[in-house]
Image 1 (cartoon, rainbow, N blue to C red):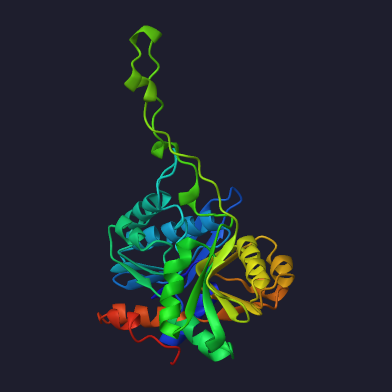
Image 2 (image 1 turned 90 degrees about the vertical axis):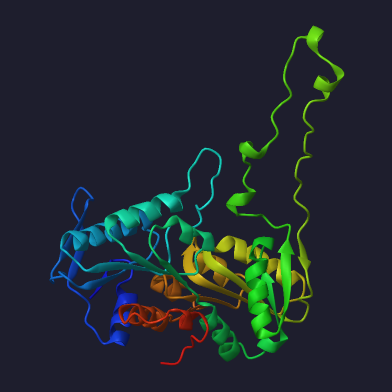
Length: 350
């Protein structure tokens, strides 16, 4: 049985239609005090339940809906409960910073406690997040669909160069470039948004001890060597993009401002067409104005996150359907078949 939360109703309908099954009756709503209520209309006793829910801008409600739906199935004697979460919320908060916490670890514990016995997700921000879960995690890949989009919908892609908008995305850009037999370019010196670039006092050297003047020695006055302060270099593009098509790849497009700034740099360096490809299209901010007035030709994302409103506002946003990948993953898991086939031979063909 396939159940859907409020964040992925359209995607769940596509998956169910491909599998030839009907969505289970499930009502998820909020009371006047904003508490989440879940009412499952069909019997789940002894059944394999697949709950499709993703992360959107209303991320905290999305999480509570998923947890309550899973717990409702658990207490109703479901045989197994699998969470199909195309975009895992809080996946960027997977490292310890300052006096915060690793939120991805907390979320993983909550999901496993609610009754989820298996997780199907797509393109985690960091693959190591799978280790936070006490249950198996299948991290599917959307790259074959995006690679096929490049080959089918970008006429002069052979004259393209794969671009990483910061050094952290160079690994993904290299993977795309090797499969398309293209070169890569890396933008260096731009405003970094990665959490790893935040100032973290835990990594700094301790101050030298303060001792009375009479007890100070030459060695104590020297203290611990101090590291020189970091200075951001001027923006530069490592690689040739002049007269070529620039294709920026990343795992998600959340704040479009950084992509627009990178596109302006590429245009100044001579790129005549600029594409942005990513798996998850959060598309925060005023994407209609920023993308529409930017040098970006197209922003291509999958339907792991609903973005119908943004797509209506900005014709540059294109969508790649990945429901066939999720439906095949569910079918193989239900029939106890190998999942490794999806990581080798996945295509867009039915």
